[in-house]
Image (cartoon, rainbow, N blue to C red; front, top):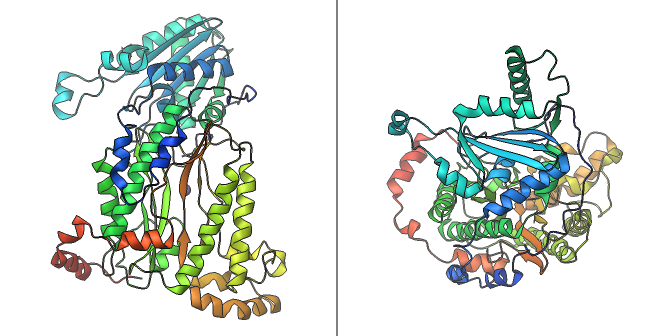
Length: 518
Ligand SMILES: [Mn+2]
């Protein structure tokens, strides 16, 4: 979701450093507990779950921070709940309200600020058909704001516009153009009702997206707590998947075990489409069809993340379907793991640019690919100088921020409050040779790497963990999800209850019903 898509005039205050907000870093100590790998439920004893929530004062602090960044004006934020239930992240960030149909109005003039949250509510008849959602009293105690029914919205916005004749309207909505249109229309409608002509000439539309993105880049202790719980649940889902997966199973069976675990522990939903790709699908970066019967001798990439109270973790593991890595799979796996560890090592030091992590990981991948004969040398470029040969097998960036969306903003350098992923990968696609180009130089390269390509084809490996940097240092939020070859093979030797209750006949009926696989 791109919150920067608004076409309005961007009048944005200079970025200020928000890293000074102290006393909100979570205790790094606690998540080291999670390293106790073979006791995955030990974390329940850590007691972090019950307290994981964002207090009303923190939401109020965020709104105050936004006012100080944007200055005087009338701010409008609209809820926009996507199908499946995710709230528009900026609205969620400022209110913590996950309901559809809500609106936040903030009027800020000098020292005074008025904030009103409008809720849709619903009539007694509506409530026969659908749950009524949060009532006004509940919303008041949750947010500390004045709460009104959306029926009062027109009245209140008119009052606010009168108080701020030169209105600065900050909007943020995934459907930006539409939101701008409707607000302008609203202004015109109000002016037409007796207000002096031109009363709204001073209106500037300001995209709050940039300020919101900068604020959201630094996570508070409470946010890191939520990302920790999301990561704990995601870790348990990986463990369940490793226990469940076996040759002859469909990818969606593993997906079901993963998403069952998410929901079982209170995750609202997967934070993004679960990627469960076996064999050739392991080399498709955003594969999310999750419908192929897997075979012994293949690897399977599982890139998944539970969303907990709006916060999404993101963790990828790659496993051998048979339970044991082949020599070739292991060759690739160890390179990707070494690249991950090299990047994570750099992330331990506060102030390190994330770009340094990327370079370090890429260097390890390049050296490994060279050893395997998949590229000519770590520095080798494509025929005609079109980019590096590494990109034939590593086609994406090292990682991204995490938070209210799976690709959230993050600071350029590692600082307290940075929450991000590290996710190097190698994907040996059989069509790699087709991407080399034409001509004698290309032919020579093709001939050179063809044997290694045959040896490693259809092996895709990605290893991703979610991290937070706190005042106590780097925390691997997803620690405890089996990650080394030995840890994964040990976990896969375990059985899941879901294996015991599997109705083979029904699975085979689907196999017959389903059209042939590509
Ligand atoms: Mn990711």
